[in-house]
Each structure stands twice: as C-alpha cells, then as structure tokens.
Image (cartoon, rainbow, N blue to C red):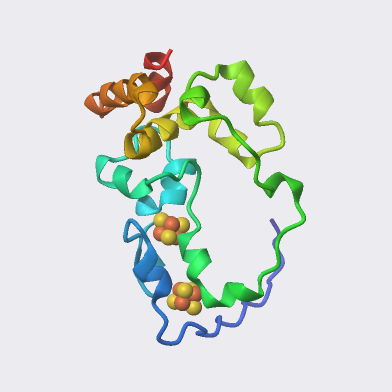
Length: 169
Ligand code: SF4
Ligand code: SF4
C-alpha cells in the first residue's frame, strides 16, 4: 500500500478480435460475455475458493476436475507462446485412486500435500471435490461407499463443507 499519486495504466489493447474460444469452451458458462466473468460459476472458484457445498447445477459440469479448471487457458491461441513454469509446486504429481483419497485423515492430507497448491483446499473441501468427481466418473463397485456419501451430502444441500468431513468418516 502507498499514498503515492501513481499514474493510471493505459487501457489494455483488445487482442481477442472475433475469437470466442474461451466463451464457447467454458463448461459452466462462467464467461458470460467478452471480458466478463461470473466467478460464482467458474469451476476454479467453485472447487478451490468456494466454501460449502458446490451448487447442484454445476456438479456435472465439473466432470473429473478435482481442483481448478484450465479449459479457457488451454484453448486461448495466445497461450501457444506460454512457457512451462519451472516452479516445482506446479508440477503434476501422482495421487492414489479417488476412493483412497477420500479416506485420508487430516494428518495424511497435510503430509501428502506438502508443497502442493492443493493444500490450500484443506481436507473438507478436498473431500467435497472428491465426492463430486466420484459422482461424475465413479462407476466401480468399490466406489459405491463414496457415492453413498455423496448422496448423503446432496440431500444435506444446506450443510457446510466441514460437515461433509463429519459424514465421510
Ligand atoms: S476456468 Fe473453467 S470454468 Fe472458469 S472460466 Fe475458465 S473454462 Fe470457465
Ligand atoms: S480464447 Fe483468448 S483470444 Fe480468444 S477470446 Fe478468449 S482470451 Fe481472447
């Protein structure tokens, strides 16, 4: 913060032209118009920042995304010049199957997520997201207990995410 009277930035140039790729690809319609984002619909917001149950109308669109969404970045033609980060924290890491992740307790979550941006979720939101993804892609018999948890959670639509932690133990 500063009290300096700083000059305002120049307006950013319109470099999108007639492209609408990000608008078209967004699974939840979060980019409501050119240069306008309704963050409350964005999967990145819903799966990372949003606390509490994810609204029912967005759960199917989340698909198999456990944490965030980069669809709009993936399709943007400008990103062909992007260079991969050297930051190790953003490197992909192997995780166990979802039903095993759902059994993690606080200590396991903290230990396994050291150095990962996913630690930011904390355990209740992590479990919440697993339940949503399992509900979308889980079709194995072994997934049924987890899916039952999701059903309980959906019935308790008004419950807070931390209560999901209670009912998944
Ligand atoms: S991150 Fe995903 S959900 Fe959010 S605006 Fe981009 S495409 Fe849409
Ligand atoms: S995909 Fe990229 S270039 Fe195309 S409209 Fe979106 S931000 Fe602009």
